[in-house]
Picture 1 (cartoon, helix red, strand yellow):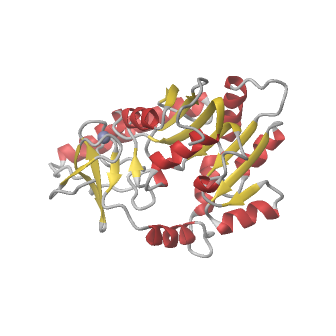
Picture 2 (cartoon, protein in one colour):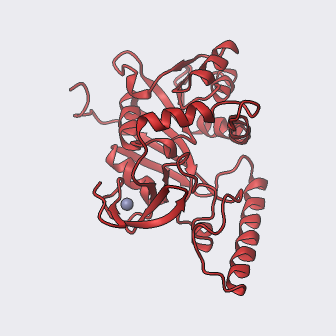
Length: 300
Ligand SMILES: [Zn+2]
């Protein structure tokens, strides 16, 4: 990616990108082609390690991880139902890897649902918690798993892709770990949907350096194509229940309209930094498959 004044190139599709959202010293650019937003320049690995060491702490010690974990765990039952509906097991247990498993709550639910599940996460504090609770989770990077020894029918990747400085290499590695026809399920906040267009930069996903990317549906298609996945479905309003789906849409429309109207009425110049972090924003849930054809890239 080459910066050129305020223009740089999208790490997903190489399209021209312009500054879209600023927070402190962090600037997020948005691609004019695939409409994915990304932090530029990307923070260093050392910076991210320090940031996440703090992030994974409890409230009492200055972190906010419990809030994040509680919000994501609401949807686990629905996600497990979707996996069991879409992945047919041949009598054997479904082998599932949860990448970015945190404290292992989702892994535990999958084990309870009869799957042969395990998790991996970079955070030593989260993995220590998971292992103390008897959950089969390991500390490390997905890139370090040996695909010749470990293969999975399903990989899940919840609320993680937007935190990675190089999401393409993680997806390529995940594909390597999947059996032919294996399924990848992941979710991430949506950028450039109706709500983001109504309130530019206001939805909660613009939160650098926690979120390094805010993917558009097109950005997801492009990166999955590059990683050689076949996109099966993208649910643009994923929620833990249908009722929550409806309520969230109404809330988004209501707040979006009120804030947008107030901004226009007060003749305040619309700026991406005017409003920060309403609990607004839609999630997309993506299902992708590794093809069943023999793979020329493998075992090289
Ligand atoms: Zn792009």
